[in-house]
Each structure stands twice: as C-alpha cells, then as structure tokens.
Length: 412
Image (tube, rainbow, N blue to C red; front, side):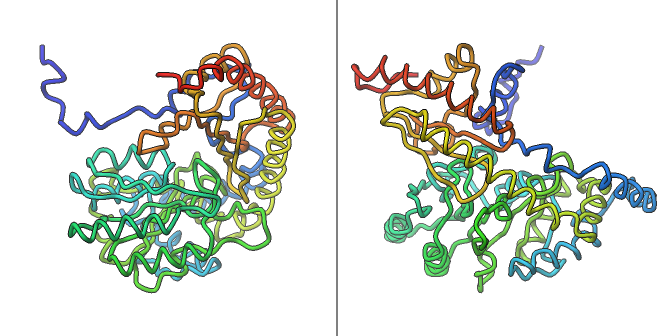
C-alpha cells in the first residue's frame, strides 16, 4: 500500500485547517455563536423576490443551466461595471473577472504572484482565509500592526525602507481597509492616500479586499482604494455574499487587463467557469435594483446588532478587557489581559457557558494574539447577543480571577 506522506506534494505541509470551520462543526444548537461571520437570513431575498428571480431564470433556462465563459457572464459584467461606477470605481467589463466567491479571487492572486519566499505584506491581525490561501505558495509575511485608524503607515514605511536597503520589495500588500476582518477597524482617508503613495514609491501592488464596504453605518461610505488609484496598482476583490446571498458563491476581481489575463488562465485550471445559474441570478438582482434596495435594510439590521453587542460589553465585561468599535461590517475584536489564552479558554466557554467565539491567534502572522478573540454579531438575534455577551463576560471574569495571580500567559 502506498504511504500517503511519501507521495504528497511538499507544499501540503503549509495547508492548515480553518479554526473557524472546525469550530462551526463543534457548535451545538444550545450554543450562542459569535464564531462564524454568517449573514442574517433576514437579509436574504424575500419570497416575492424569489418568485421574480425564478420566473426570470425560466426565461433564460437554456443559458442559465449551461457552461459559461471563464471570465464571467458578459451581462453580469456589464451590470457590475455600472454598479461599481456608483462607488467611483471605473472598471470596463473586460477588467472584471467573476469568481466563485471572493475567496477564489484571493487564492488566484496568490497563484499568479507568489513565489516561495516572496514578501507579502499583511495587517496584524488579518483575514484567516487569506493566510490559508497564501500559505500554499510559501511567502515570507511582513506583518504591520494596526491601531484605531487601520494599518500603521509609519511602520509600513519604515519596513519598506529597510527592505529597499536590502534590495528587496514586497510582491503585494493585502489589506481589508473598510470594516476589516477580524477587527472591524477601518483605515483613515489620510492613511489610504499615503498607502497609495508608498505603493508607487516602492513599486508594489495593493490587493484591496472589500466584502464590507457597503455595510457602513455612517451616512458616508469610506472611499475605496481602487477609486483613488491612478496607476493601476490596486487589485480590487469583492463579493455578493454579504449584500445578497453567500449561497450563490459569486465574487469578482477588478484589475488591469494584464493582470486579468493571468487570472483567467488560473481560473480555467481551477473550475473552468463559475456557475452560470448563480451568475444569472446575480445579474437579475443587479439589473432590477434588488441589491441596491436591500443594502439599507442590511445596514439597519447590523447597526442595531452592533449596538446591542457594544452596549452589552460595556455593561458586562470586566476591567482589563478592550474591544474595537467598528463603523460597520460584522465583527468586534477583543483583547483580554495578556495572561489569558483564548484558545484554551474556548473549550470551557463552549461546554460550560454555551457561547462560541473565534480565538484570535490564527489571524496573526507573527505568532501573537493569544489573548484575543473575534466576535461576530451578524447572525444571532439581539436578545441572544445580549445573553451571549453576559455569559461570555462571566467566563472572562472567571479566567481573570483564576490566572491573574500568575500574571503569565497560559501555554497552549
């Protein structure tokens, strides 16, 4: 019998299971979950919407149930170009490629750009699934810490300067500048401008991942990096999972034609094309204004849930705990005292307090974050958010009392 480990590719040693996906499988019905960033089903298309959608699909059934082109449904790309123009992103349909969720777009960018030991700049912390995608290509990460205004650009500039002295530069910088996952933090406008200047000065691409740009609760949306890009340095990745339906698995990438050409070659090898059926559904939703009409409802629902979580944390969390106060998105990031290991604490919280969160360590490429956790307010009802935070606060209070006398970090 063949020994599997003898024949596996060497790169599989960088493959890691998703802590979030593993955690979701462990959660029972009696657990209040702040773990997965699942959209609230109330934000999905209504029964009346579905009737109209299915009637449309029936009218195009011969195309909808057929193979499509790799680049994406032409009608969808035309509508998407108009959709993007409303957020000041100028994109010809030829500069857009439809992907099977934005995660596929992130993975394809890793495939076409990263050689082993290439430098990839990320935020600390950053999106776990992006780390998983990039890890396959064995980059060296340059992690840049964040504060309440996003990635600390002064630190980035310092690191870029020292790379230049060594005759090195990043392959690209990956960022979620608006309502970041996992922190919920948004990059300030001044830092966005400076980031673009540094990309030009030090000659690297920026990958802007923007799942939450439409879920900003203030009146003014934050300006996308791609809308400010004058040199074609920003590769824009987004999705309809948060503003329409994650079950459709429709995302997209916007980039200059030279980049898109290689993305198409990569996608041909991955899945030939994204499903025509879900592309036609998304096309109909865009063309008929279903998505535009849905966004205000989504913002209202998530703003109320965010407020419920923040108010509950203010009321119940003990001294020594800090958290972000996002202007939108789905997440609040939390720091416990440094001597608390949130991964070890999770199992007690799950089994005894019946609450789930995502330990923050796996979002950090520098080995830090053992005392952090990500909380998602998007899925549970508001009364469950309040009750879940009350229970979680009890667990955190217990941990602080138990371990503060040692004042050392628990060892995993």
